[in-house]
Amino acid sequence: MKMDEALTLNRQRLRPERRAKSRRERERGWGPASIEKCRHNRPMIFTILVLLLALLPSPARAEYTRVELKIFGMDCAICAHGVRVAVQKVEGVESVELSLEHAQADIRLRAGNAVALDRFRQIVKGNGFEPKDATVTAVGTVRDSGGKLSFDISGVGTSLSVSPDKTSAATLKLLKSALDAKAAAVFEVSGVVTLGKDGKETIAVSSARQR
Amino acid sequence: MLRSPIVAACIVIAATATTPRFAAASGHGPVFGGAPPTLGKGGWQLDQAWMGRLGKGRSDDEQMLRTMLSLGITEDLQISASLPITLDSGIYMPRGRVMAMMSSNQDFETIMGWRFQRSAVGAGSRLESTLFVGATVPMQEFRSDGMLATPSVHASVASGFASRRHYFWVGGGYQYYTEREGDQMGDSFYYSAVYGYRPPFLRTDYPKPDLRFFVEAVGEHTARGLHHGFEMVVSGGDSILVGPSALLLYKQYGLEAGLLFPVYQQTNLQPDEKFRFGVNFTYFFWRK
Image (cartoon, rainbow over all chains, first blue to last red; front, side, top):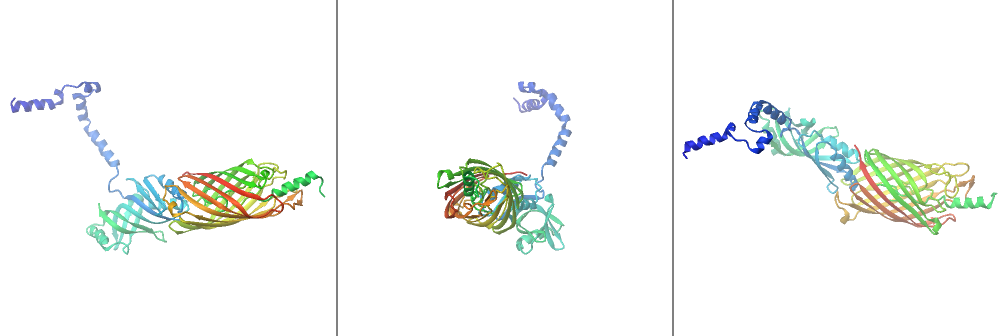
């Protein structure tokens, strides 16, 4: 067979109207006609896909992804179990591990959650214990307002003041350099969140990665 | 002065029964002594206790099952209610309590605990103090010895230190029985001290089982009671008991057991006590 003849035959095979229906296709009503119908519905399918994608959480959504909360006063297994059960019931919590030896709850959160750190503090208090500092990993926006850096986690309505004293110079430089040309930049940040006596939260950033 | 030998016999029998006999704690504290821990907010606790006392004679033996339900209203406020099932009351029906969460009488009991002081002094340790007030209502017209059953009120305080290694709690309380037609049980004053220890090899992390051991000391003083308005000479007394207990916690389950042996008894001619025991199973559950 010549090359031209072979190509023509292949094109014919690829054209749906030339294809013979298989038994399965016949049973399901598939075939050239149904494929044509799909072509007409393309705009609608595209719209549905776009809507579905819009519903999916953005990877840069501002939220906590992990919280390691120090808890003082827990001495026994039933203390830890009570806290674990209560935290596990919070919507958006993926997993929680309690450690009496390390006196902390290690909480992993699902993407798209809207859980604030204070929710976990309230749960710990409700069980009769004292929440302390929390080591967190979160995605949020770093802003510079009058020389003071803040880390806003808009998904949970939280704004943390970046502690310049407890954040390393290199990390501060990284955050500020990202803000040189703009008012805000999205970062994934890890650090220790402390609740002050005035009710304000500060974060000592240990690592930051621009998103 | 006494109308008949039968009345006299009743008085003697009633008198022998007016010393507090036994009681058991619940939850995650010691078995017999008082302790300040309360439930968390929205926490529930179901206790099933089996407690008893063995006397010098077979007829002195007493055994009881008691079921208690507790609810944590806030992290510092808890209410409890308990019902008894008497297994073996003999002649000497148990009457009092030994400063814990469960009465040893055939009474319905409610207790409210308010943890008025709490401070975390370290990662796994805390100091706390709790005030308990309660009331009992008899579930029978007469005690098994023929004495009229009457309601009572009581109040106690427990305070102490809890940590991953050591526990130390002290407490004391007072129980007052009302008078009815000249019958009244003697007031009780009770006190306790508990030391607990969790050895290093048992200091395993959650969710592994959590076992610890206690040495409990319980003391009680009971005033003389009244029968038909007469003070009963053979009633009241003092005793101090000491013994070991252990508490095992795993997830939402708790199991504790203990024994107390008398080291001092002044029973005003009433039968001596050989030992008392308590076994308690606890199921914890939480609701939103």
